[in-house]
Image 1 (cartoon, rainbow, N blue to C red):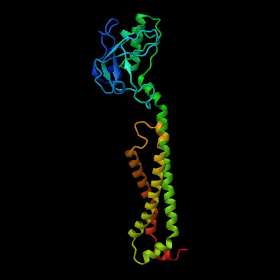
Image 2: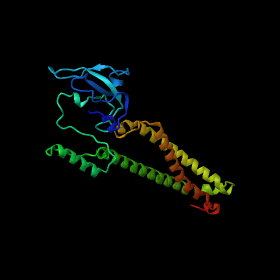
Image 3: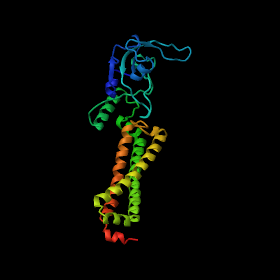
Image 4: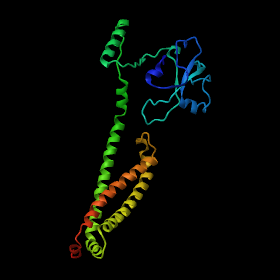
Length: 276
């Protein structure tokens, strides 16, 4: 890593300093660590000034590194991975430069003009240098394609499930109203008003909904661990998500039950009494 790397990549420097021109091959070897390193390796102790060695193969020197800075945690492979302890070392103190080094550029210039300028600058140094451009935002987007597809499919099937539940509840309540047409007619003939009929139908729809939500919630909690790997930013048993889902399903069920309840309240008592 070179000076300004963390600022360029957008990783906050939480304590200490970044690498600078004083970090040379002959100076004290330094390192910058992330929060996970401090939490896991140092058990939360003040990291600045602490020294450590890294494991090397037998016969290879194990230099002592001094921690000069702490950065925020990052994820490097995919967004589902845990924050792991990470150490950063200045490129100026490496014994051998990496053959496939990367240069990270943060610029507000248009991409085409920026690439042209960089090509010209590199070509003026050595036309034989082989290089390629990669846009960080594009790489991040490509890494999230599968997760975005899964989120889209999950949302679609969730909507489809809610729609089927509403249609099913509507069908059950409508069938129940038809089966009890004469009873509803008798109730209205002896004084029950439309509000009483709607309340009665909705109460029964509410009982069915409560049973369904109870069974569904139990199954959802039992199978939460199975879909844990597909979730990002959510816990398998996230209470807020569960509450929102229950409220939405209750609203859908209430709407599905209200239509047949309203139709039942509009029945003509005389016709209902003669219904077979």
